[in-house]
Image (tube, rainbow, N blue to C red; front, side):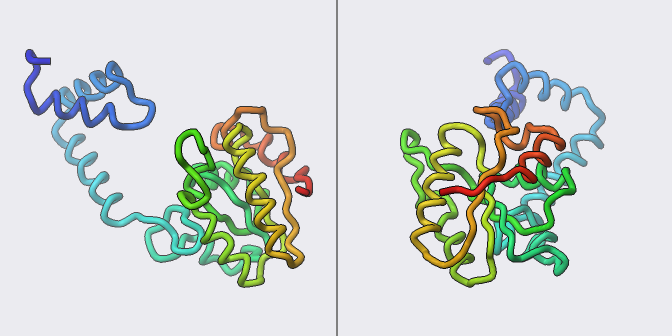
Length: 202
């Protein structure tokens, strides 16, 4: 837009890169920031820099962490024999809200999607298999999304875990979750029931 200052256009363009933010939403956000007191923008800027500089991903499970290990992996009270596999860090938050799960997690950082060029090598499957080979895990709960990609990912993981041999039980969340639904948007009760009603795979 030639009628807008270059700095404002640049801000709108950067905001449209955020997930779920279209051009109109980006314009509203940009104009809100323009009208807001300077202190608001400075706090937002500081918060963004602090997140970029001080927050990363756990070296064990890839959940969000301020240090090498996230609070879940660092908690000795968690059950290390039980690992729940999810696609995204937001899924960990959704499950933790239920208060029903006391095991550990493994965040794949995606799902298998051949049409998008995402295979097992593009997500954290090798890291998961490395954890399983250490021998502490007795049950693997597959909590990928209930969509085509999530089902393909779960099927693949069940197969490769079976090929490892050993006595690792593999289970899948119960069908309380709607087909095509994403775990992070499910309510706590639905997730809790899906956890308690998980079923063996294979």
